[in-house]
Length: 331
Image (cartoon, rainbow, N blue to C red; front, side, top):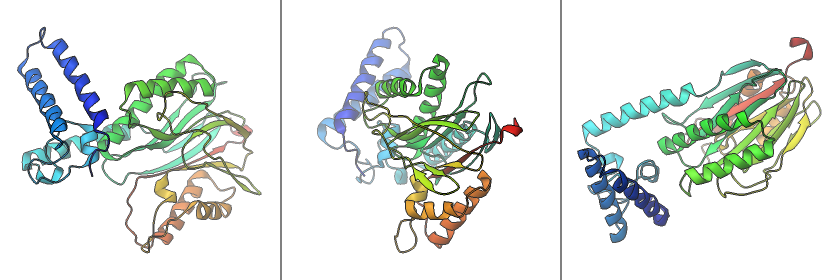
């Protein structure tokens, strides 16, 4: 698969070249000269039209590999044994770091009972999940849930960026709309043009109050005692444009209601005949799970998914989270 926007790649490489030229007179280390040579070589491949073609097998390289490092010259299949071992070590390290950024799988405080399942299809994932605890008892619990464009290491790097970005901005105590708008602008300014994420950002109050914004993500589901409600995306994905209107939905969950969030690894999972699981089947399953604890709601959903797939191969990361307000007597 070839990189589709060579203009973006060239812009990024030219920026790197300019930065290297700026520090070379003061720091003449040999490795900086080698890096400048590699950048020039990549720019040359762009000009010749053979950028993204493996120098060994002459086949197109993996797009996510080039997005992670636009200086790569050979595809994964053509790496030497030493290079393959080094890459495997890097992936293992990245997986450990990404796993350490995840919240507690069973979270039960701040007025909420929350459980999630996180199932990357490879060593690292483009799915993003974060719970940010309030600094004061009267503040809400903040959550981020979504899916970064792409797969592998490139996507996992962007999830780490999201993790740090929102946590740093929360200290400003902004309304949710302004928090998302400011984060969106910074993300656009600090990442390549093809970097974006579908994202649900929200706040959970101790009395069951919820406010959330769906930025191009799979519709969150509100499972009440008599119905299941969906919250459609109100704006384009996060980071796609540097400006936008971020509509926030506000509602209250009662004691036995819960909020169900999922990535497209659930809704787009396919069985052996190529049929997708789909949102309607998710809703039908949840209608049978009203009032159960969050962990049981997720277990029931994933059990139905396994029956549907019937041994079909999983091709995408899958993350599911259920949030239910705790009874007032519990805190």
